Every structure is written in C-alpha cells, then in structure tokens.
Image (cartoon, rainbow, N blue to C red; front, top):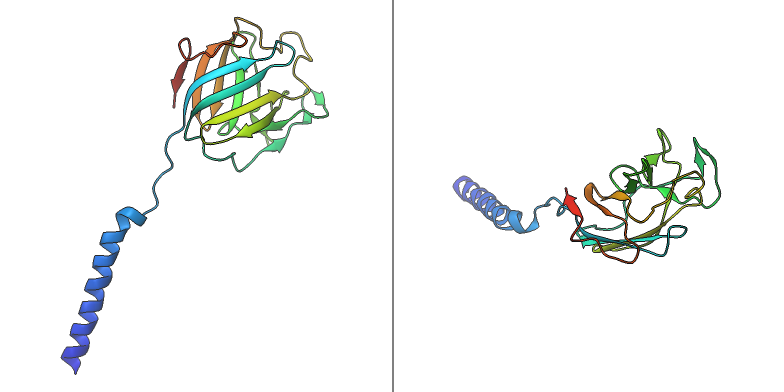
Length: 172
C-alpha cells in the first residue's frame, strides 16, 4: 500500500506539474501592450479646441484622476481633471504651459482636461475653464505641442482641423 500511495502521489504531482506547464503560457498574466499614439487632430478653434488622439492600446481610462478646480493659479469651476503624469496630459511647447498633469498631493497644472470619450483606440478631450484665462494659455495655429497618453507621447504642430500624423512624432 505504501508503494501505491507513493506512486499515486507521484502521479498527482506529475499531472499537476504537466497541467501547470501546459497552461502557464496561455494563462499567465502578461504585461499590457505598450500604448502608441498614431495621430492627433485638434478641431474647433483657438477659443474652444477639441483634441482627438488616435492610436492603440490606450486601455480604459486611468484608474486615478483628480478634480482640477483648486489650483495654485486660483479656484475654478468646471476646470476638468488632472490625470497624473502617467495618464493624460498635453503641453504647448511654444508657450510653455500644460494641462491635465497633476495630483492632489503635489498639485498640478492650472488647466485641467475634460475627457469626452476614452476607448482603447481613441481619446477625445476638451480643456477646463482655466484654458485661455492667461495670455497664451491657448493652442494657437502653429504652436508646437506634445500629448501624452499612458506614457506614450506624440509631438506635432497645431493646425485646426488637420490630423498631424505626418508632422508628428511618437515615442513610448
């Protein structure tokens, strides 16, 4: 009986090992695919732009976002949200301002962003109420910009109504 119990136990261990080896690659947790921004289109006008980011692997909205109404620049109503440095933000590289980055512990940009939609392939947003409240806190035609979604950045030039895949560059 002792030999039978030992060989049964050995068989169970062998089966579990084989099952684990055969299911681990398919069932193992894999790292999420790296997000890639392929193009950015800015529509509307300088006073009321809408930013559409197209790409892949954006996943779902970042887990954390924080209200951007209470900023170091003042109190605002309907100023959107901060999405952190690993979520969603944009910078106007010509006039040195950005929107959407920050958190309540360390503060953030004076301008928040208001996400209209977020899918694995597209993010659409507008700016919070602090947009255009100071000189050159606007996306003017010809301004250089950088958009970041989940640590994937894309740089281009503002041209209202025109996608910027040719003039832009993407990095992860």
